[in-house]
Amino acid sequence: MSWYVHHVNLQAHDVRQAAAFFRDIVGLEEGVWTYPDKTGEVGHNPNTIAYFGTENRGLHIVRAIASFAADNGFIHNPTIGGHFALCVPDLAAVKARLETAGVAISDAGVYAMAGIHQLYCFDPSSNIVEINQVVEPSGGAGPLQDAVHPIRKEPGDWYIHHVNRQAHDVPTTAAFYNKLIGMEPGIFVTPSADQIGDFDRSNNSLAVFGPENRGLHLVRGMATFHVDNSLMHNPTFGGHVALTVPSVEAVMKRMDRAGHLYSDAGTYAMAGMHQVYTYDPSMNFIEINQDIN
Ligand SMILES: [Fe+2]
Ligand SMILES: [Fe+2]
Image 1 (spheres, rainbow, N blue to C red):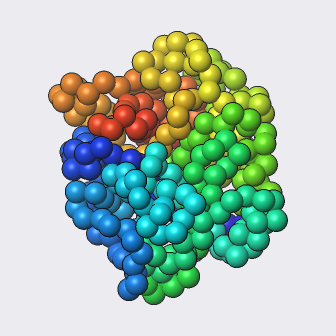
Image 2 (cartoon, protein in one colour):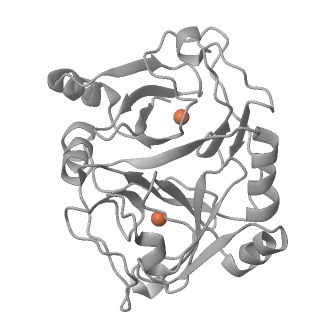
């Protein structure tokens, strides 16, 4: 089944401060959100949402709204703690499999993004997952592509490389994405022996979905990961989003100038990628990387 990471949603305490970080330090360009004709109780204004990308794909930065689930009749509140969204070609089939498996879902219908039918649930590691489908390509959502999570460059010349989610039980969580969502497992491609870092890549600690390390990474939290790899930041806790940019050196220079702390991991986990870790102003863990092939 073809699928792609449609967007990643990050909770921000100060949306404008977070937006400034992604615009001025990371180098992304702010985009324009497209609401459907009939909007749900989303309650957003420029101080509660910032957006980077096109056709509502990309990065969503929102302030938590405590009443969001109650306002919309949902079980899940997607504004608290952030989430990520997978776009699938047949949401009805996914919904049927989730219901058969007894997974609690919030079927939001088309309520926040033009032409997109959205559904929320928790994966077995309690990560909130949005699953959506483009139901009206003419509504500005764009057609579903044939390839799995293809590279999609957004204004500012960046793309979502992968989403990382912490899993308490990697095999069980991987089975959820495989059997219920319908995603095929991928292969994690590591750098050469002289470059590779010190981390557990067994099936109990790591599962990936998507091509060439792009897509979804499920990892077990590893307490000493950052120490073992001489990093300030530990990317195995709390999940993160990885953005591929044209120049990590330029981003690091801007972080240096701003006194913003980061870990330059170099090429150590993924073949041909230079990886840098940092926190955004709301302490969301962010990976910024560059394809150096
Ligand atoms: Fe979302
Ligand atoms: Fe990562």
